[in-house]
Length: 246
Image 1 (cartoon, rainbow, N blue to C red):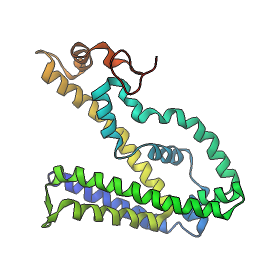
Image 2 (image 1 turned 180 degrees about the vertical axis):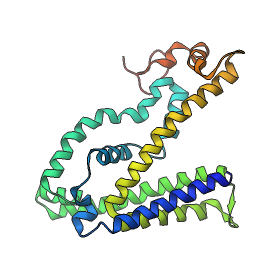
Image 3 (image 1 turned 90 degrees about the vertical axis):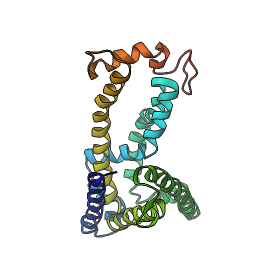
Image 4 (image 1 turned 45 degrees about the vertical axis):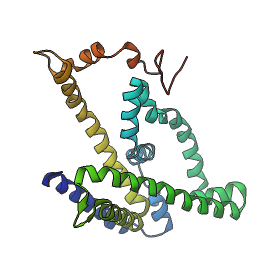
């Protein structure tokens, strides 16, 4: 990583902390903290759902799946397409029940405070494990990029606590409003960067397997020449696949 990379990371973290401070000023009560005052529009809701359906592990899983199985590897992430209609229906139920948290929903639905407490305890343990997995992944990715040491210490021992503090900081300060704005910014970046990578990837294919005179726009043709037809089957096929449909 060079100076520009570190500058982008620094500005990103400062921006996230700034969102936390800004969102904190909007919080006047529990409903503002947990539900954002119920003022989120379609754009914020869309990217919040997008953020819930994507994560830092998805690019790695999708790359592994497509490398091993071809286009059918995309279902490692795209299965959310089938869940989305259910979300459209269930989200209306939650909204009409006027619940602030899922713990409230379990309490109302089953008329039992014990169910709400049980969900809260389960959520604490679940997210402890889930968060530990994500922070471990951050450490594993950061070491090859930033080197084994940072400020005289092992990189993961510096970077992981720093990221944890910043995320906790803006999340605790700003509540759901800070989280939704973060999902909006990250979602836009994910979409734009994913699109920007396509011509670079095609150019790399042409450079390695193309002939003189080919441009990056010939990348798809070159891929079809180099790979078997089963690689381009969306739902698997005769070749071994993790996502077959016969």
